[in-house]
Amino acid sequence: MPRLTLSVRNVDDARTRDALERVVRTASLVDGQPPFSDQSLIDAASGARTLILAVEPQDPPVDSDDFAVVGAAILGHGELEFVVEPEWRGHGYGRAALRGVLANCPPQVRIWAHGDHPASRVLAQEFGFSPIRTLLQLRLTKTPTSRARPATAGHADVTVGTFRPGIDEEEWLEVNALAFADHPEQGRMTLDDLRAREAESWFDADDFLLARGSDGDLLGFIWLKVEDTVGEVYAVGVHPAASGRGLGRLLMEAGLARLRDRRVEAVTLYVEADNLPAVSLYRSLGFTDHTIDVQYARTDA
View 1 (cartoon, rainbow, N blue to C red):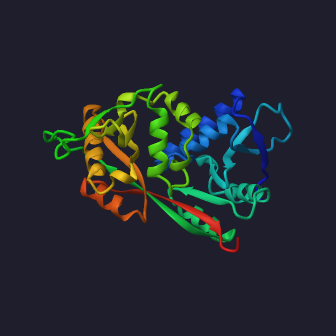
View 2: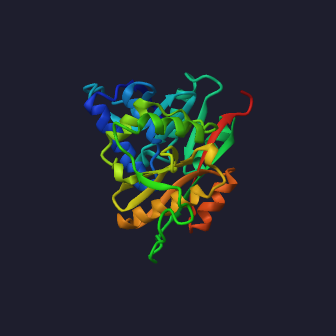
Protein backbone atom coordinates (compact mmCIF):
# COMPACT_ATOMS: atom_id res chain seq x y z
CA MET A 1 0.00 0.00 0.00
CA PRO A 2 1.39 3.46 -0.86
CA ARG A 3 2.60 5.51 2.07
CA LEU A 4 0.98 8.89 2.39
CA THR A 5 0.90 11.73 4.86
CA LEU A 6 -2.26 13.83 4.92
CA SER A 7 -1.47 17.37 5.96
CA VAL A 8 -3.92 20.21 6.64
CA ARG A 9 -2.41 23.31 5.05
CA ASN A 10 -3.02 27.04 5.03
CA VAL A 11 -3.39 28.55 1.57
CA ASP A 12 -1.76 31.73 2.89
CA ASP A 13 1.52 29.80 2.98
CA ALA A 14 3.35 30.53 -0.28
CA ARG A 15 4.71 27.00 -0.77
CA THR A 16 1.31 25.49 -0.11
CA ARG A 17 -0.34 27.90 -2.51
CA ASP A 18 2.23 27.10 -5.20
CA ALA A 19 1.73 23.36 -4.66
CA LEU A 20 -2.05 23.69 -4.92
CA GLU A 21 -1.84 25.82 -8.06
CA ARG A 22 0.52 23.27 -9.63
CA VAL A 23 -1.85 20.39 -8.88
CA VAL A 24 -4.83 22.32 -10.27
CA ARG A 25 -2.94 23.41 -13.39
CA THR A 26 -1.54 19.95 -14.19
CA ALA A 27 -4.80 18.10 -13.54
CA SER A 28 -6.75 20.65 -15.58
CA LEU A 29 -4.46 20.17 -18.57
CA VAL A 30 -4.62 16.37 -18.41
CA ASP A 31 -8.31 16.01 -17.54
CA GLY A 32 -9.66 18.88 -19.61
CA GLN A 33 -11.32 20.58 -16.64
CA PRO A 34 -10.36 21.84 -13.16
CA PRO A 35 -10.51 19.41 -10.22
CA PHE A 36 -12.07 21.97 -7.85
CA SER A 37 -14.95 24.40 -8.17
CA ASP A 38 -14.29 28.14 -7.96
CA GLN A 39 -16.29 28.28 -4.72
CA SER A 40 -14.16 25.56 -3.13
CA LEU A 41 -10.94 27.40 -4.00
CA ILE A 42 -12.33 30.69 -2.69
CA ASP A 43 -13.47 29.01 0.53
CA ALA A 44 -10.10 27.29 0.98
CA ALA A 45 -8.33 30.63 0.59
CA SER A 46 -10.60 32.28 3.17
CA GLY A 47 -10.47 29.37 5.61
CA ALA A 48 -14.15 28.47 5.13
CA ARG A 49 -13.08 25.06 3.83
CA THR A 50 -10.11 22.89 4.71
CA LEU A 51 -7.26 22.22 2.30
CA ILE A 52 -5.57 18.86 2.71
CA LEU A 53 -2.42 17.90 0.83
CA ALA A 54 -1.49 14.25 0.30
CA VAL A 55 2.28 14.09 0.61
CA GLU A 56 4.65 11.21 0.00
CA PRO A 57 6.89 10.77 3.07
CA GLN A 58 10.57 11.41 2.38
CA ASP A 59 13.01 8.67 3.37
CA PRO A 60 15.32 9.70 4.86
CA PRO A 61 13.37 12.68 6.24
CA VAL A 62 14.25 16.05 4.75
CA ASP A 63 13.29 19.64 5.43
CA SER A 64 9.55 19.70 6.23
CA ASP A 65 9.13 22.49 3.66
CA ASP A 66 10.41 20.17 0.92
CA PHE A 67 7.55 17.83 0.07
CA ALA A 68 6.34 15.81 -2.90
CA VAL A 69 2.63 16.50 -3.36
CA VAL A 70 0.72 13.45 -4.57
CA GLY A 71 -2.72 15.05 -4.48
CA ALA A 72 -5.00 17.55 -2.81
CA ALA A 73 -8.44 17.61 -1.23
CA ILE A 74 -10.79 20.42 -0.20
CA LEU A 75 -13.34 19.64 2.49
CA GLY A 76 -16.20 21.75 3.82
CA HIS A 77 -19.92 22.50 3.75
CA GLY A 78 -20.56 18.76 3.73
CA GLU A 79 -18.65 18.28 0.47
CA LEU A 80 -15.33 16.77 -0.53
CA GLU A 81 -13.36 17.28 -3.72
CA PHE A 82 -10.01 15.61 -4.25
CA VAL A 83 -7.56 14.96 -7.04
CA VAL A 84 -4.38 12.96 -7.55
CA GLU A 85 -1.50 14.51 -9.49
CA PRO A 86 -1.53 12.86 -12.95
CA GLU A 87 2.05 11.58 -12.64
CA TRP A 88 1.13 9.71 -9.42
CA ARG A 89 -1.99 8.03 -10.77
CA GLY A 90 -2.41 4.30 -11.25
CA HIS A 91 -0.45 3.31 -8.14
CA GLY A 92 -3.15 3.28 -5.47
CA TYR A 93 -2.52 6.77 -4.12
CA GLY A 94 -6.10 7.88 -4.76
CA ARG A 95 -7.46 4.95 -2.78
CA ALA A 96 -5.04 5.58 0.09
CA ALA A 97 -5.77 9.32 0.16
CA LEU A 98 -9.53 8.83 0.05
CA ARG A 99 -9.41 6.27 2.84
CA GLY A 100 -7.46 8.66 5.05
CA VAL A 101 -9.64 11.69 4.33
CA LEU A 102 -12.92 9.81 4.78
CA ALA A 103 -11.76 8.57 8.17
CA ASN A 104 -12.12 12.17 9.36
CA CYS A 105 -15.35 13.03 7.51
CA PRO A 106 -18.95 12.77 8.71
CA PRO A 107 -20.83 9.85 7.13
CA GLN A 108 -23.13 12.28 5.28
CA VAL A 109 -20.26 13.81 3.29
CA ARG A 110 -20.85 14.16 -0.44
CA ILE A 111 -18.03 13.73 -2.95
CA TRP A 112 -17.69 15.42 -6.31
CA ALA A 113 -16.10 13.56 -9.21
CA HIS A 114 -15.34 16.21 -11.82
CA GLY A 115 -15.23 14.53 -15.20
CA ASP A 116 -16.82 11.25 -14.09
CA HIS A 117 -13.58 9.36 -14.68
CA PRO A 118 -13.74 5.54 -14.59
CA ALA A 119 -11.35 5.46 -11.61
CA SER A 120 -13.69 7.69 -9.60
CA ARG A 121 -16.61 5.34 -10.25
CA VAL A 122 -14.55 2.38 -9.07
CA LEU A 123 -13.49 4.17 -5.87
CA ALA A 124 -17.03 5.37 -5.19
CA GLN A 125 -18.41 1.85 -5.37
CA GLU A 126 -15.55 0.47 -3.28
CA PHE A 127 -16.20 2.97 -0.48
CA GLY A 128 -19.99 2.55 -0.55
CA PHE A 129 -20.97 5.71 -2.44
CA SER A 130 -23.68 6.03 -5.09
CA PRO A 131 -24.39 8.87 -7.55
CA ILE A 132 -27.05 11.34 -6.40
CA ARG A 133 -26.52 14.31 -8.72
CA THR A 134 -25.28 14.84 -12.27
CA LEU A 135 -23.95 18.12 -13.62
CA LEU A 136 -23.48 18.39 -17.38
CA GLN A 137 -20.80 20.53 -18.96
CA LEU A 138 -22.03 21.56 -22.40
CA ARG A 139 -19.85 23.18 -25.04
CA LEU A 140 -20.39 25.31 -28.12
CA THR A 141 -17.32 25.22 -30.34
CA LYS A 142 -18.43 27.82 -32.83
CA THR A 143 -20.48 30.86 -31.93
CA PRO A 144 -22.93 32.05 -34.60
CA THR A 145 -21.25 34.30 -37.17
CA SER A 146 -24.40 35.70 -38.73
CA ARG A 147 -25.49 39.20 -37.85
CA ALA A 148 -27.15 38.99 -34.45
CA ARG A 149 -30.59 40.41 -33.91
CA PRO A 150 -30.85 43.12 -31.25
CA ALA A 151 -30.44 41.60 -27.78
CA THR A 152 -33.89 42.76 -26.71
CA ALA A 153 -35.77 41.88 -29.90
CA GLY A 154 -39.32 40.93 -28.92
CA HIS A 155 -38.84 42.49 -25.48
CA ALA A 156 -39.37 46.21 -26.00
CA ASP A 157 -39.78 46.75 -22.26
CA VAL A 158 -36.41 45.14 -21.43
CA THR A 159 -32.97 46.75 -21.52
CA VAL A 160 -29.67 44.91 -21.18
CA GLY A 161 -26.77 46.70 -19.53
CA THR A 162 -23.60 45.83 -17.67
CA PHE A 163 -23.00 45.19 -13.99
CA ARG A 164 -21.84 48.20 -11.97
CA PRO A 165 -19.37 47.20 -9.22
CA GLY A 166 -20.14 48.96 -5.97
CA ILE A 167 -23.75 49.60 -7.00
CA ASP A 168 -25.47 46.43 -8.18
CA GLU A 169 -24.19 43.84 -5.69
CA GLU A 170 -27.08 43.77 -3.22
CA GLU A 171 -29.80 43.78 -5.87
CA TRP A 172 -28.04 41.06 -7.84
CA LEU A 173 -27.58 38.89 -4.75
CA GLU A 174 -31.31 39.12 -4.03
CA VAL A 175 -32.31 38.06 -7.54
CA ASN A 176 -29.61 35.39 -7.66
CA ALA A 177 -30.91 33.85 -4.42
CA LEU A 178 -34.46 33.77 -5.80
CA ALA A 179 -33.43 32.41 -9.20
CA PHE A 180 -31.32 29.67 -7.63
CA ALA A 181 -33.38 28.97 -4.51
CA ASP A 182 -33.08 25.22 -5.13
CA HIS A 183 -29.42 25.29 -6.15
CA PRO A 184 -27.10 24.26 -3.30
CA GLU A 185 -24.10 26.32 -4.48
CA GLN A 186 -25.12 29.29 -6.61
CA GLY A 187 -28.15 30.20 -4.52
CA ARG A 188 -26.22 30.70 -1.30
CA MET A 189 -23.63 33.11 -2.69
CA THR A 190 -22.82 35.91 -0.25
CA LEU A 191 -21.54 39.45 -0.70
CA ASP A 192 -18.07 38.27 0.31
CA ASP A 193 -18.26 35.51 -2.32
CA LEU A 194 -19.27 38.02 -4.98
CA ARG A 195 -16.54 40.48 -4.05
CA ALA A 196 -13.98 37.68 -4.08
CA ARG A 197 -14.94 36.95 -7.67
CA GLU A 198 -14.81 40.64 -8.56
CA ALA A 199 -11.19 40.55 -7.37
CA GLU A 200 -10.29 37.64 -9.67
CA SER A 201 -8.11 38.40 -12.70
CA TRP A 202 -10.77 37.06 -15.07
CA PHE A 203 -13.57 39.33 -13.81
CA ASP A 204 -14.77 41.97 -16.27
CA ALA A 205 -17.92 43.96 -15.48
CA ASP A 206 -18.60 44.22 -19.23
CA ASP A 207 -19.00 40.42 -19.25
CA PHE A 208 -21.70 40.61 -16.56
CA LEU A 209 -24.98 41.53 -18.27
CA LEU A 210 -28.15 42.58 -16.44
CA ALA A 211 -31.67 42.65 -17.91
CA ARG A 212 -33.98 45.28 -16.45
CA GLY A 213 -37.66 46.02 -16.94
CA SER A 214 -39.14 49.39 -17.85
CA ASP A 215 -39.34 50.22 -14.14
CA GLY A 216 -35.62 49.56 -13.70
CA ASP A 217 -36.09 46.39 -11.66
CA LEU A 218 -33.60 43.58 -12.25
CA LEU A 219 -35.28 40.74 -14.15
CA GLY A 220 -32.33 38.49 -14.90
CA PHE A 221 -28.64 38.27 -15.68
CA ILE A 222 -25.95 36.39 -17.53
CA TRP A 223 -22.44 36.33 -16.10
CA LEU A 224 -19.57 35.38 -18.40
CA LYS A 225 -16.07 34.24 -17.54
CA VAL A 226 -13.40 34.48 -20.23
CA GLU A 227 -10.02 32.82 -19.81
CA ASP A 228 -7.65 32.52 -22.77
CA THR A 229 -9.81 31.48 -25.73
CA VAL A 230 -12.66 29.86 -23.79
CA GLY A 231 -15.73 31.70 -22.59
CA GLU A 232 -17.88 30.24 -19.83
CA VAL A 233 -21.50 31.05 -19.14
CA TYR A 234 -20.67 31.34 -15.47
CA ALA A 235 -24.27 31.85 -14.38
CA VAL A 236 -27.54 32.79 -16.01
CA GLY A 237 -30.66 33.42 -13.96
CA VAL A 238 -34.13 34.93 -14.21
CA HIS A 239 -36.24 36.34 -11.38
CA PRO A 240 -39.07 33.84 -10.74
CA ALA A 241 -41.65 36.59 -11.24
CA ALA A 242 -40.30 37.15 -14.77
CA SER A 243 -40.11 33.51 -15.80
CA GLY A 244 -41.98 32.30 -18.86
CA ARG A 245 -41.24 35.45 -20.88
CA GLY A 246 -38.32 34.09 -22.88
CA LEU A 247 -35.74 36.04 -20.89
CA GLY A 248 -33.47 33.01 -20.59
CA ARG A 249 -33.06 32.86 -24.36
CA LEU A 250 -32.72 36.65 -24.58
CA LEU A 251 -29.91 36.60 -22.02
CA MET A 252 -28.16 33.66 -23.67
CA GLU A 253 -28.25 35.39 -27.06
CA ALA A 254 -26.90 38.59 -25.52
CA GLY A 255 -24.15 36.63 -23.79
CA LEU A 256 -23.17 34.76 -26.94
CA ALA A 257 -23.03 38.05 -28.84
CA ARG A 258 -20.67 39.42 -26.19
CA LEU A 259 -18.48 36.31 -26.37
CA ARG A 260 -18.39 36.57 -30.15
CA ASP A 261 -17.06 40.12 -29.73
CA ARG A 262 -14.46 38.71 -27.33
CA ARG A 263 -13.42 36.29 -30.11
CA VAL A 264 -13.51 33.17 -27.97
CA GLU A 265 -13.01 29.81 -29.70
CA ALA A 266 -15.42 27.87 -27.51
CA VAL A 267 -18.21 28.52 -25.02
CA THR A 268 -18.89 26.24 -22.07
CA LEU A 269 -21.51 26.06 -19.34
CA TYR A 270 -22.70 23.80 -16.54
CA VAL A 271 -26.29 22.68 -16.03
CA GLU A 272 -28.06 20.17 -13.82
CA ALA A 273 -28.92 17.11 -15.91
CA ASP A 274 -32.49 17.08 -14.57
CA ASN A 275 -33.11 20.75 -15.47
CA LEU A 276 -34.79 19.75 -18.72
CA PRO A 277 -36.03 23.23 -19.81
CA ALA A 278 -32.53 24.70 -19.46
CA VAL A 279 -30.87 21.73 -21.18
CA SER A 280 -33.38 22.05 -24.04
CA LEU A 281 -32.64 25.77 -24.41
CA TYR A 282 -28.89 25.26 -24.50
CA ARG A 283 -29.12 22.43 -27.03
CA SER A 284 -31.34 24.60 -29.24
CA LEU A 285 -28.51 27.15 -29.27
CA GLY A 286 -26.02 24.54 -30.48
CA PHE A 287 -24.46 23.34 -27.22
CA THR A 288 -23.45 19.66 -27.07
CA ASP A 289 -22.21 17.33 -24.31
CA HIS A 290 -18.59 17.80 -23.25
CA THR A 291 -18.03 16.31 -19.79
CA ILE A 292 -20.04 15.18 -16.77
CA ASP A 293 -19.59 15.92 -13.05
CA VAL A 294 -21.14 13.45 -10.62
CA GLN A 295 -21.82 13.91 -6.92
CA TYR A 296 -21.78 10.83 -4.71
CA ALA A 297 -23.18 10.07 -1.26
CA ARG A 298 -23.03 6.99 0.93
CA THR A 299 -25.92 4.65 0.30
CA ASP A 300 -26.26 3.88 4.02
CA ALA A 301 -25.83 7.45 5.35
